[in-house]
Length: 335
Image 1 (cartoon, rainbow, N blue to C red):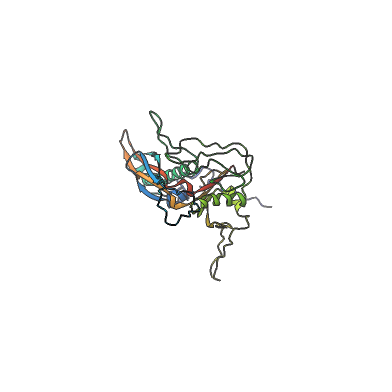
Image 2: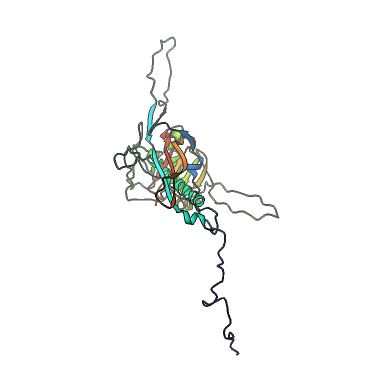
């Protein structure tokens, strides 16, 4: 076999010889932006006028037989006052700084580092807010050196009698679970949630109990919000609606998740896969009873210069509004 050799003094591309070779850097930045923020995108948007915002919710008295005597004088029932709910607004922000030199030079994949930075940080901020919304944080007034916080969905959905074997706003995945969320009849959720350490399997039985709990109080929980871990279990439920997609011969067939629609005795429910919730919780939501209230909507603004660089801040001041906590429910302590 003949060994190939390079002629002496050949000026080639490799092995450190050709110093003038241009780099082959693609002019594309391949983005990985998992920013499917369902709550931030889909919930109603409202205007706040103070750092503590309030709203009213009404519940009805339990139904009775209501049979009246013929010719009897009317007697008068007490008129139930609406419940007054509230939450503190939370300030959420992202910042970045770009040197004037970097903004001036030619760059791969973007013409402006400031514009790219604003886009990236805005998306990160939306993910931060989504995480706060769908998890279990409580609302606090803050203080010197402590930021105000708004309560998440988990904290709003409470029940004094969390159950593993019947309809409830808080359904336990197992009878051994000790997870609780205090019910909210007025004010703001300010008591920390008890998660417990014992967990059980997420099943169609406990999901249906949660849907029934919301339905019994007048809610229409059309949305089931859950993480990939619990959706994998829901995909196997027998009441999942099969989704058929008609495809012509010239089109490529699309693949859809098995559990985009869940059918129960209490309606048809969209199943939304959410990256930002907790694996141990499945939320059953009436979207019409939730909103995001802004004192200051998303804004990008320059900060004062202190050197040879541009400073930017992306900021919002907001609160999650639960118009009536009885309209939604959840399954907790899921393995």
